[in-house]
Image (cartoon, rainbow over all chains, first blue to last red):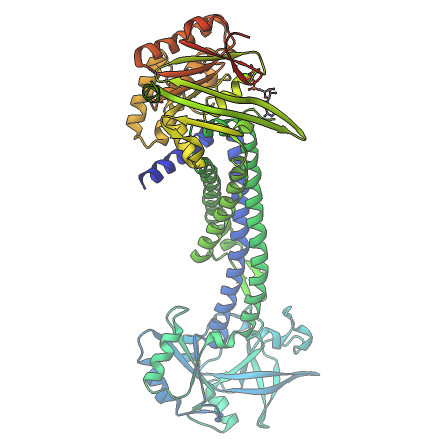
Length: 403
Length: 233
Ligand SMILES: Nc1ncnc2c1ncn2[C@@H]1O[C@H](COP(=O)(O)OP(=O)(O)OP(=O)(O)O)[C@@H](O)[C@H]1O
Ligand SMILES: [Mg+2]
């Protein structure tokens, strides 16, 4: 066993000398290419992570909050939502709750009309679970006692360059009156109080009226179509769901991720692209290392023969090349990370990329970094191993005196 | 008589042959060579170019595998050794000096010298110490930190000799160690070998074609056409 450590020492010594006393230009160029390969891997995956992160945040911030409580399967409404709210609010980490009615409607303005969902909101509660009130691009958010007023998303209003402009009302502005035909047959006119733009196509297709107004339309009281629950942070929702159920919430409790079907689709196609790009990145890194190590073994053919002649084991020699490859890959990863953290992440934080799912910045995940880094190092190890292993297959005499 | 031979003999070959195969041609470079080298002997292998001197040295130094025949070194039958045992054997028991100064350009003189000791598992301090001792023996202690390109051919060859000596080999093999050197350097190297053999009883097997070397050594093994012959060819 001690022979193994001393063998490692000899390999490390040879690798170190080869790098330290070898051609600096080659070393720097190799590290540069490895760094580029790593940045490429990291950039794409952190951009995708950023896009997914942005989409998830949009779903939570503007659509469903962290947790949604819905009526049991065969019921339209949650009865007596206050008792549920009381239970849910008692759980530590719950930051806000909002009971909403949701109903289908047809909204008409002049010649144009379309089908959109109208939600009710009690503004005091709603601002605790959603950020829509911070995203008004015209007019104001609802106030508690508003009755004849509605706020609508930019895809409903039209005229703000939305992706679904052709389906919109074609340019409603604040102060205009729209007619809303609710699913239950009730028809009312509302003054547009505000228009919001969440940067997220799904939440931009909603309209909101106050709870009081909705109850008078539906003829209900003390009921809800859904209860949105805001919890501390993202990702720990399942634990809250368990606690709610333990506290006796018998309704259908789901986390935001159940609703994030589009995200799942986006994630899947991203994952495919991401994997492809990663594989290409690993190949670039691997081939670079292969060429560098190959050239080195060719130019040191005779030296390798001499080392073997004087009794240095082949495995020691091969390992010295693998160590060199690891060194290149590690330096590449470190310089790549420096470029990411010192240049790219700050740049995209101040200049986010605008996507339909919102403003996207680079999100570097530890797990991604580690797998990409390890992938790069593994590719380099294999690429360092193959040429050096092949080189020591040659007979000693051929290596030293052959041509 | 046989008994005494067995104790004194460090290398023994029986019917050692090496035939190179070039396409359909067979080139017999060594033909049934049987010889003994005694412990503490300074022997030279001489003969015309192409007579098989290097080939013989490579077989005895375990750098090549004979086509036929037996080699026993230090009581060990070589054909029974695996590739890695042969490598270990070379590291522990042999020292080599080649015609070209075969030292690594990236290492200093001292590092070149102690590399085989490092491979044996010696600590850095031990390596440095015995490396300096070996450099001392070849008279290059003050060049310890020089890289090969900063040294003359003769100095590089002495570094190679110091490296060959570091693990206190049983046998020192040298294939025309002075062929690339001027007269003065050649003489220095030969005297070094002579002194090593005289003072420490180092067994040395050296290929040479300098006729004057024949006077310095204990014995000359003459080769002609791959066979051991009685006298100069
Ligand atoms: N790898 C090889 N393949 C084929 N033939 C070879 C090979 N090596 C040597 N030979 C042949 O074997 C014979 C002996 O060669 P060897 O190198 O042992 O000679 P030598 O006595 O060392 O000569 P020199 O004094 O020129 O070094 C020569 O005829 C040579 O051509
Ligand atoms: Mg020769």
